[in-house]
Image (tube, rainbow, N blue to C red; front, side):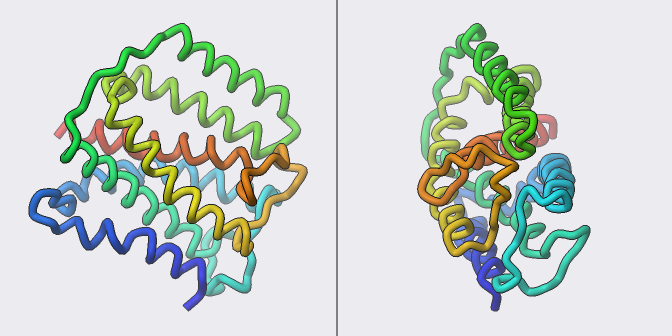
Length: 222
């Protein structure tokens, strides 16, 4: 079995098994997960297809099964199914075991962060990955602010974001150190944390926050 496929299985294995635990019963919420990935994963997959085609990043064939759709290896597509499942599962588990608290969000600081992200994106317009991911991050903050401000001010949401960065670091380290995924130096800043491109932290934030937000909105509107 190829390594990227194994990584996908490991990502979802524990959350999937625990989904049937009597207190969590996450399997009952599967429809909201599906609604979330339909919106969010579809958007990121479109970006992935475009970025791969223009050479922003590439995939090492040594660790792939060789099955492709729209120019992407099947393992990469599965990544947009397994990762959101694990992240949303963590969010639901955190809410189950921790009492939430409303945080005070300063709108001026929020707008400043959005403005800074946009400015830095424009300054790096020639670097495709840096430019796109910073705009996606700014958009994510704006969507949180206007579509689900309660989630934005939820302590459990930010705890979830911190917790998800632990597996993010582990998985992304393997993907970039082996490497399974390689990056075009002209597409990003070339700054790295270990072997992980600095931009990946923004990529992770925008994806995870949007998966959780659209899941949360779907569940609240049931």
